[in-house]
Length: 255
Image 1 (tube, helix red, strand yellow):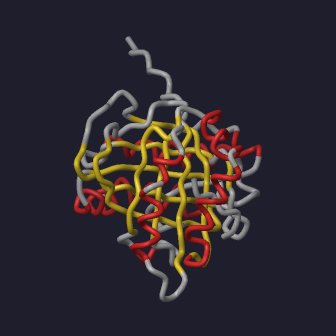
Image 2: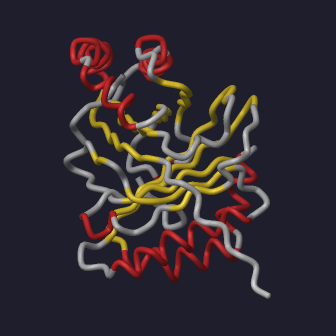
Image 3: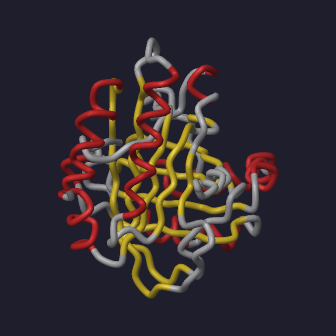
């Protein structure tokens, strides 16, 4: 699949790939037991870069605060935590937020909700150096909630001026046919350009786990073949890997 080692975030979205200290903070997936099929699903990915000097407790507050937003009615799926790997040299994020919605209107309602605004203002913005968000509409997802332990590869493409966007989308669409390790694939054109740093095409590939993801990278001949199909059309790329963490432990009822 496409993975360029060359070179997203809105004040109301989040994702990070950081230092070892930050990786110690527990990531939180939510609604991991929900499985359903949707004809159209809105994908919302936010990437964050946490300041290096940030205390682990503050990073935990960011993760827990964003994770609590899964209770909002419009949210179909929410997972947030540290990145497994940041493959981009110019944009060095440390954490990622992945959410899904039935419609653009539901995403807008989430962004405007007072709980979301408060978490961003109090727990996110004070401790980040950079943020980026990309939104797109995906077709025919069979499982709206990637299982815990799944590995996600998220790719954002910035096209050269005058590039044939439809041609690039066609190549991206064919990625799952060449990489059988992919269990679910989502792609589309970003519809929130003001938050995406100029990146206009996004994809999200789901793998059973990190082993299956690494197997893709080991097939360099096929990877390079896929890259060569669009290399002349691409100005820069952001690629990050993320593992869906296990759900937080159930809280015991107090007497």
